[in-house]
Image (cartoon, rainbow, N blue to C red; front, side, top):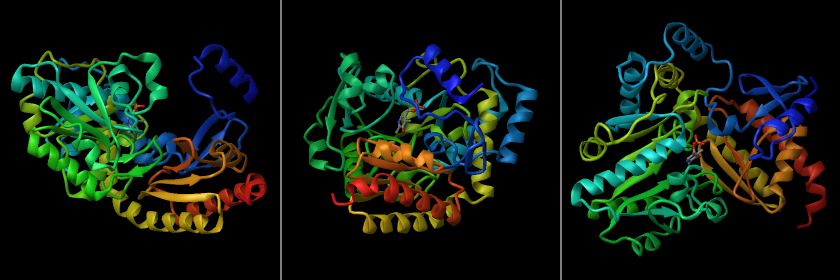
Length: 405
Ligand SMILES: *Cc1c(COP(=O)(O)O)cnc(C)c1O
C-alpha cells in the first residue's frame, strides 16, 4: 500500500490525538530511519529521546531475542532474574537504593507521587499534603501526572485534578520558598525541562531547592525521564549538580525502545512509604523488559556511552552556537550534552516539516524551540550532516522570507 493509504487508514482507525508528520517509518539502521518509500532520514529525535543506542544494536537485539524465547512475562507474584539484575544495575549507576519498575514514564510519576504522599502520611496520619511543581513542566498525561504538569492547555479540560498542587517558577528559588508550608510533602521537577523548551536547572536553583527539602523533611522528586540515561553526559542529570533526589523517575531511554519506566528511591523513602498492597502493576518489571534494561545498562558501560556524549556534545554545542551567530532568527541555544534546544523567532513547526523534506528528523519543544535529542551514538559526521541539512532549510525554505526579521 502507498504511504498515503496507510495515513488515511490511520486517521480512520486511530484516535486523532497527534497531528503526525506525513511519513510512514519502516525501519532503522544506526542513526538513520527509512520510510516506506525508502527515503532516508538522519534521526535527531530518537523517538523522543528513547533510542539512545540508535537502531539495530546487535548485542541489544540478541539479548531481547533470547529472552523472548525463554520467558516474556510472569507477573509480580514471583521473582524473575532479569529484572533483579536490572534493578541492581540501575541502583549502581544512580547511587539510589530501591526501584519500582513501571510500563511508562507517566506511571513512574504516578508511583513517585504516591510514594511521597505515603511518606508524609506515615509521619503524621494526615491526608491534606501539598506538592510543589513547576510552571512549564511536563510529567505525563494521566490524571496524577497532569496534576503536576504546569501547562494550562493540557490540564484545563480535565480539572479538577487530584491532590493539592501549587506551581512555582522554574529557576526562581524565591517562588518556591513562597509556597512551602507545613503541609508540603514533595517538590517535583525535571532536572532539565524538556517539553517546556529545554531549560536546564541552574546550579543555584537545584541546590537551593535541595536545601529547602532537607530543612523541612520534604521529598525532592527529580524527573529524569527525558534528560536521564546519559543524555546530559552524566548517567542522570542531577549527578552534575552534586545533589541527590529522594525519588527519581526514569523511562524513555531506559529500555532502549521497550516500554519501561521506573521510580527509584532512597532506602529512607522506601522504608517509610509504599508497603505490600499499596501499589502494583501486572506487566511492570517483567523478564522481557528486565533483559532490555539490563542489556542497555551493560552497553552503556561497555561502549563508554557517557564519555562519548561528553565528547560529541561539545562539538554539537559549538555547531549550534555557530548557527546562532549566523542566523538572526536563532535567538538562543540552551541545553546540556545531547539535549539541546534552539529558540527560533520563526515558526518551528514549519522548520521541522521542511527538515523532513531534506531528510532530517528534528522535533519541537514548547512553542518556539527546535529540540535536538539524537541517539547518543552520533558522531561528528552526523552533526555535520544535520547542520548542513538544517542550514539548507534555514537558507532556502524559511530563511529567505524571514531573514530580515
Ligand atoms: C515523556 C516524559 C514523561 C512521560 O513519559 P511517558 O513514557 O510518555 O508516559 C514524563 N516526564 C518527562 C520529563 C518526559 O519527557
